[in-house]
Image 1 (cartoon, rainbow, N blue to C red):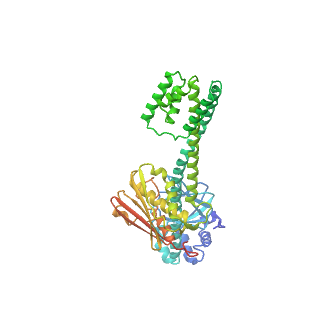
Image 2: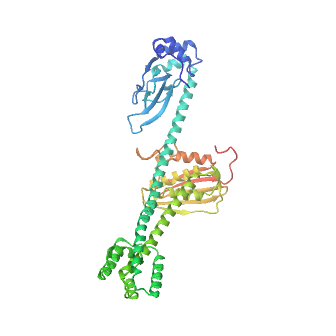
Image 3: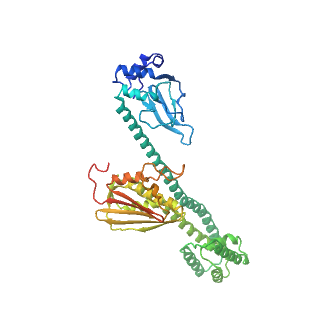
Length: 481
């Protein structure tokens, strides 16, 4: 509602002016004159300059607030949840209301511009409703709107918190291959320069045609090899052995070359054979050339692997969010589960194993793909948290008559019986303060209901199962809204 046309100073000084101001508020506009006059006698009106607090968080909730002009903003100023929460404008009725369970004001209300507010004491609510019974249903309506707005706001906060966790995980997943590609690219320039220098020196060597052919064959053979994965002790022993061989033959930078040669599965026997085939040629120049050639091949392989991983992650993100696709379409539940596992991969690395038992004969189902992926995200994420970093999650799919069934099972401690009946309540959580906004199972339940499906839970120590059943048939137009 726009700012009411009133004279704030007159309203504060004259009860008849306050009555006229109350008549301009939608909640009170058609009430009897006598009732409004009685209300005005109980109320306190005053003008608040910019920045002054009309209500402070933590104070007893003992008054109803009627904004008559200007604008107020409510914020949490004393806790970790700082930030803008809501705006009160001229014509709004808020604060403590009849039937409200509020004990203290949760936020501080400050004037954004010079504003006028009237307050009504909660101690007079009973008489107010007796004199003006019309207000019963109106106050209930205001409370219902307030609860609905808070629920929507809390749901949005929960979604943003979940999105923040996913974004952080995906950023971490993207950073690793991106950093690897960057390092490989930087090293590639050095390897190419080393190859050029080795070639320039070898051009001065008396290499025969057969030796040049042999050198090309050796390079091709080494370039086709996969990088050897050795543990740190084994790699150290291999490099020490190779470096010793090179130093005995006065090869400079022996330790650097030894590290590169170890990647190519090169050992002392191979170097002995190599040296015997190129008598009369500088061994150092030969080894530098084959080492540089292999290093270039290895670095190119790393770049391809890293960029492929980035492309895979981007593809998974697009599949997860159903970017550039219609909201509702026929989807394969397995694709959604797999893209969800990619998004949660940063949490799975801690020691949680995933076992898949898929029935790939399940046909595609009509669904809102991105919303359904939120179901898998919450169920799998909760299972990971329940395992505490170590255990197994089994994802099982099956066709059950006219439904597709997806089961997420973990071998964690189970859900205590005392709270099992509450897990689908909005914002219910077993996590300590600061460790999340909830289990997200209210969102899961509502999404499954939206798809005309059902969700069941069975839990005992050592096994918790969530089963989601979704219809295979198409939703009617206008359904699932």
